[in-house]
Figure (cartoon, rainbow, N blue to C red):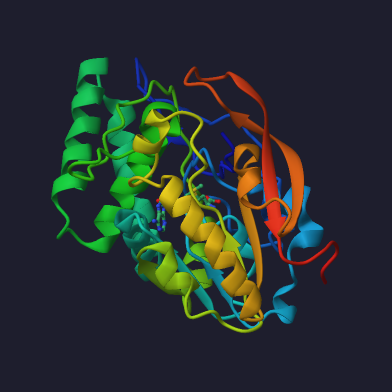
Amino acid sequence: MVSCDDVSAPVPVKQSGPARARRMRVKAPPLAEAAGGSALLSLLKFAGAKWWVHEKVPHLLPEPANVTAYREPFCGTIAVGTKYLGKVPCVISDAYAPLIAMYEGVRADPLAVRAQLLELVGAHFAAESREEQQAHYYGIRDDFNQSISASAVRRAAWMIYLNRTCYNGLQRVNLKKGEFNVPVGKYKSVSVPSEATFLAWSAALKDATLSACDFMKTIFPVVRGAFYFLDSPYVAASKSANFTNYSGVFGPKEQAALAESLSEIDAGGARFMLTNSAMARPLYEGRWNILEVGVDRSISCKVGQRAKAKEIVVTNYADLCL
Ligand SMILES: C[S@@+](CC[C@H](N)C(=O)[O-])C[C@H]1O[C@@H](n2cnc3c(N)ncnc32)[C@H](O)[C@@H]1O
């Protein structure tokens, strides 16, 4: 799992004897500079996040000055979008509505989201027993799934809390009801992004169009001169994987529709970068430039088991765009 935790906030853990606070292990965020020197470190842990694009293929990311607009229809953590937010007109969207609501909450009142998040995380680690901690987590998970009329700020805090304390940082919903159904994780501590990070996200998202919608709506109509970053759910390694990832099914039909849309983006005078697992290669072979990169990511349900996964970066432009 790629994550860029911001570690400036100490988070209280289960207290025994005198109250004490433990600091999260420090992991230097490698991306602040790559992402334009901003404080836009990830608000969420997302197994499929594409922060590595800044490190592995920076030469393939057009400079904001050279694009008319930015479109990211599978935004997740908006890892790649951090280079464009606030610099060009951006449309940031995802089919998972609670994710977009989370960004709306952070944009509206970043410090209130953080304050509520700290309370939730504090209560999580102040629990006297594992059972009490589970009851807290599952109570918040029920609220998150059932109280869609709660304020954007509250929903944002719930989402980040669940994301950081759930099992293995998974993002998974049940298909019938669309409810987040990941069990509680077993962390001794979790990090909470700093005030600076929340404020930076709020400022960066200020003029962006945020939308909860299917990817097609963000791709079309194609904007001449725009840059499209397309990072759909992976081509599934197994049949069941289609049914457990993210917010719903993204199967062969959707993969094919996305692949088809590339010709129209290209014909519309825009550039695209698409990422997927190397298994998706046949969909793009012979039509576009394909670069294969090795990426560290968790490929096992066992925490800590990581390996280099092969991913592809597909573009309609050759090397070194400035
Ligand atoms: C691989 S993740 C994107 C990760 C993101 N690029 C990042 O760096 O964090 C795929 C995203 O696609 C979204 N998604 C799934 N089906 C979709 C659809 N039909 N239209 C738009 N978004 C969809 C999921 O909710 C998920 O956030």
